[in-house]
Amino acid sequence: MSALVEPVARLIEAFSRLPGIGPKTAQRLTYHLLRAPEGEARTLAAALVAVRDEVVFCDLCFNISTGPRCPICLDPGRDDDRLCVVEEPLDVLALERTRVMRGRYHVLHGAISPMDGIGPDRLRIRELLARVGERAGEGSPYTEIILATNPTLEGEATA
Image (cartoon, rainbow, N blue to C red):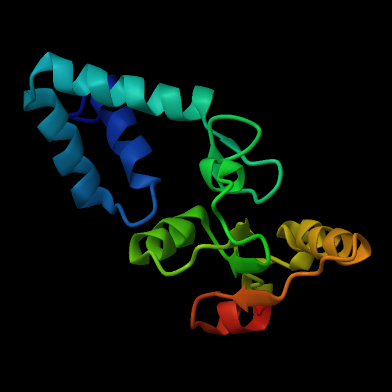
């Protein structure tokens, strides 16, 4: 018989399934929430529900959004001739913080990894090719496509 009550054990298990969270960190997070003011735990719960209910992927670039198009795709001040291809939405965030990239993005949602069974068909590569082809077909091809994948074996294979 476990010394943990069911709700505590379930929360520890849920936290430990998150990337980068091991069993000890999951326990610390759980016990922090038990000791925290009720409002803090309810705020966290509400934020988790809101992310699942309100956040979608942009129809064009596949960045995170709360509507069909993300704020970057809706921004008329962007350079429409430059396209930066990244692996994850967090990469968009990192590049935006530099304030250097003022073009558009395309998020692949991963990298090719044969060891993990992830091939090109599991990424947004087909959509990228369609997007580039559509622009070229309209007579206004991108003047620059930046492959900003991570400097890993998987990122290089994806590029």
